[in-house]
Image (cartoon, rainbow, N blue to C red):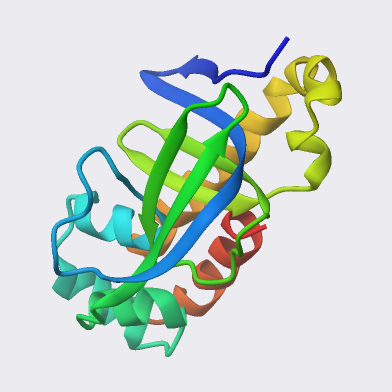
Length: 177
């Protein structure tokens, strides 16, 4: 049995975590339109859909000199990555992100929390079809990780100059596996 998305409901939150293998990685211009149906992930997705002005985000994050990828996104950096991921069910997903450390052949988790997305490297065991029953049995853990990442990103958006460095480090630890 293949591991499909896992969903959890917590106070109106929907969470989906799927695993797959990166089959394509290319640098993209973030200003051009994302491919149809592509997810927007990383801090880029939170900044663009977070509901706060990019000016307040910029002031809180850049003032502390934290979060290189986030700084680039809020200052108007136009370069990011497009990852094409072959999911374990055979479908493909494309995600556009400011994360640049993922490579072709990496096993990754695609996490969706509400209207945000994230891609993170995962151990290859998550993409081994023989492990899918075991992976399914720990879906509470994978959804908890996705929620912790999303919470850290929101905290970074709400950070002040004094708290931005710590908040950016939490995002790095919790979201970029």
